[in-house]
Length: 287
Image 1 (cartoon, one colour):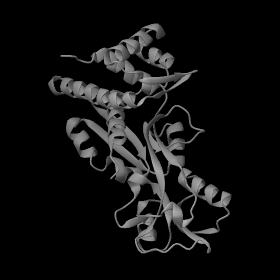
Image 2 (cartoon, one colour):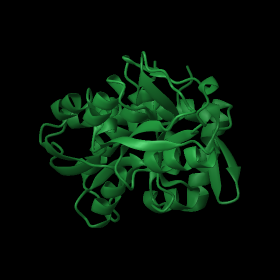
Image 3 (spheres, helix red, strand yellow):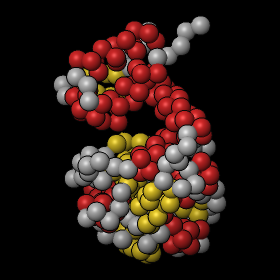
Image 4 (cartoon, helix red, strand yellow):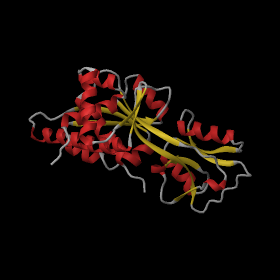
């Protein structure tokens, strides 16, 4: 029976999380050559190329994405098994920031399970838009954030990529010959910037009908036909409809969601919760 090597899987995950073999080697306290050899052995053992390599960067192959998901589960199960028989339970405080839309879509069902596994870890959650969460992380107010990717913010790990959809109430009739009523987050939100920029580029008239601080505002504005908006696929509710490309609105591309940790050494509690969030968010299936 063929089995995957545990050490090779851990090295593979470290490379992906660090974003390069050089950084992974530093985090693992090993030489770059040793890390490269581990990756090569894993690829030889599976008979698959796991990374598409180019100068100073890489992307996961299809097989690499599949294996990464399994590798994280294997490593997490190992950690969970160790904690289950260990006399020393992981403890501490995790100050976590997440936009409330992402909270509803990604962690609503996982927090209770995590707390039951790690009863001595206390989670403190701050809901805010991504722009403000980045600032809170820089100022040392948070240990970990899940946020929409901002090109100006380095050091994050990509955990999810989703298509952005235009959405409206089921019976909403869009007339693009008239100014378009929009429900938008406040200034500084990446979603808002992308929506406004694309509408302006396509010379569409629009106005802000409903400025929202959280998902409740979008629920009210969209469900009642007061406005339309654009959200990532996993945030689309069943009572809404996705506006078709044929209706004349510009394509908004994809949104990238990243996990950012405070610089320097992080506690075991933060690391455990980061692993949980990473696995939960990356493995959610959009229906």
